[in-house]
Structure formats: C-alpha cells, structure tokens
Length: 385
Image (cartoon, rainbow, N blue to C red; front, side, top):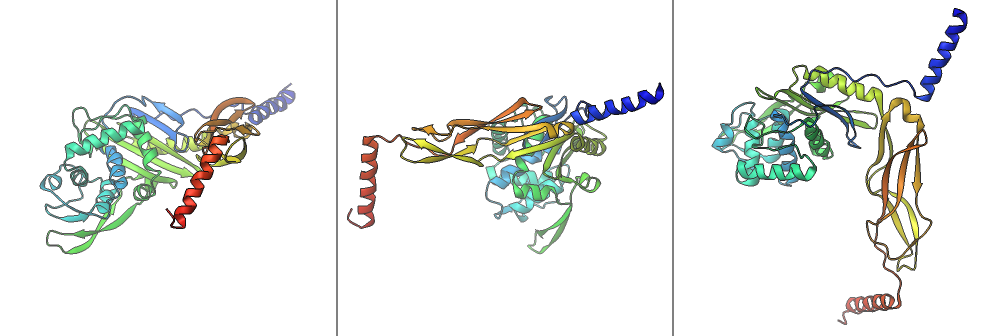
C-alpha cells in the first residue's frame, strides 16, 4: 500500500505546485511596533502591521525635507548657516555659525549623516523660518496622500503633534525615490562634500551613510534611518531586484536591520511584478470619425502593472479593450478603453486608456474658422498683418 500512496502523494503535490494552489510562505514575524511593505511601482501593500497607526517618525521625517529641497531648483545656491541651525541638538553635520555651504551639500548631509543642523539650515533658507517651512511640509504631505502625518519640524526630533505612519512614510519614500538625485544620495554608502570653514578655507568633509542595510543587503538602495527616545529605532528601506523595487518601513523596532532585511527578502521571494505598460505609453492609434484630426493616440492613464504571488505569475493575462474607431468630438483625457489584468481568467485589475489629444468635430463652421485662422497666420508670417 505504501508503494502506491507515495507516487500518488508526489503527483498531488506536483499538481498543486503547477496550478499555483500551494500558498505563499507566511509573512515573517517581525518585532516592529508598526510596519509595511509596498511595491514601489504599483503602490500595492504586500505586508502590513499597524500600518496606519500614528507614531513618532524620528529622522525619517527628513525624506520629506529632502524632496522639498531638491524640487526647489535651488541646489546650487549658497546657504549661510544661522546660530539656530548650528545649535540644533542631536545628530549633526557639525555646521558652524556663519559657514557657507551649497544647498546641495546640505541635502547630502541631511540624508547620509542625518544632520539635524542641515535640516534647520535648509528650512530657514527655503522658507525664511522653520515655522514657515513646516507649513510647506504639511502641504506637500497632504498633496501626496500622506493623510496620517503631521510635521512640526524638518528633522524629526520629538515634538507634540509631530507624527506619521508606516504607510505614509512608505508613500513619501515611493514618491521621493522617483527623483534621480534623491535616489542617488540615499543609495550612496560613503562620499565627500566640499566644506568651507568659518575662515573660508576649503577642504573635503567625509560622510558615511547611517543606513547599515546598504552594507547588509546587496539589493538595498535606500532610504533613511531614524531614532529618538519616543520613536525608538526606525528605518525606511528600499531594495531593487530585477525590475522590481520594494519599500519597507519599520517603526519602533529594536531589530530594524534584521526585520527590514527579511521583510524585503520575503517580498522578493513571494511576489513578482507583472509590468505591462508605463503611464503615458501609447497603446494604439484610433481613427476618428468626423473629426478635424483623422486619428488620436490612445495612452495609458496610470501604471499598467500588477504585483502577484509568485506562484500565480504564469497565470496572468492581459486584454486591451479599445474601439476600432471613435466619433468626434474627443476630449483630452477622455476614457476610451481599458487594460484588464486577469489571473486564471478572473479579472483582478483595470487601468484606463485615455485620449492623448483633443479632436474637434468636423462641422462647416469649424472648417471655415480653421481656414480663416490658417489664412491669418500665413498673412502674419508674410508680414502683411
């Protein structure tokens, strides 16, 4: 009887494996008070633990400070360090009162050395005061969808009413990592910056990244550490394997390095990115009936990608639903079709396809006005108007 059962059992296991019926590995048991793991491209949550709970974020706050500074377009401007900035407590770049330093170098020191003094110097330079910069921070956070966050300073030192959540920090990091300069800074293990002392003498200042995960995990490429008495050890981390980037956040976690590493590895092992098209990609051109333009581009409205359990990857199929023609008028951004993702023939996600251009209806009045406009342009080009 045993001789018969064993082959049957092996066959059954093989069938389950091929059909994707064997469940994914259980999520790791991490020690964090709150945590989340998301896919950077789609924003899909792959793991969560108290992900929306409001907690002190410590220096992970600086993700927001840095991206505001980078997006200001003023990185090559020179900043004069104030007494308030130089005297800021906690982790420091060791800025000196009256020292002059490029905003670009301050952002580098902010993210790699976690300089609280750099955070204040950035805030004062860009907004005139820390208080006004905080208004910018909260406005930016809300616009990006970090709704469980409120900031009272640019560095993350403990303050009443200064909080965020694991999800919000992952969401802010996801946005920030789209910026090439931000991504380059946070992935750098060690660098040197130009440094002018109080007497104006130039020398190099070495900076080593506080994010030890960059040395511990080969695929790691960011993002930011944080530690205060209230927040405990925190880490926003990212890693990239093949075409997939994952972002992990652990808050109040005394095993932050280990927990972040196993969380990222678990994500890569158990989930795969099915990437079909990027936002703005042209899917097709559609003929336009009775339009002043004969055709329009059909473009993808959002990222057409899906993260699935690894054992379901081969079961993913995609259908593009578009009309053969479309009738004018057509408005820019108008939905004209869909991309539909299926797993085992079951629809699981749709992404809109929209018109890239506006097309007016071809009417006698519109044709006459267009001819008149073109005639006036020609006369103007000839210098007759």
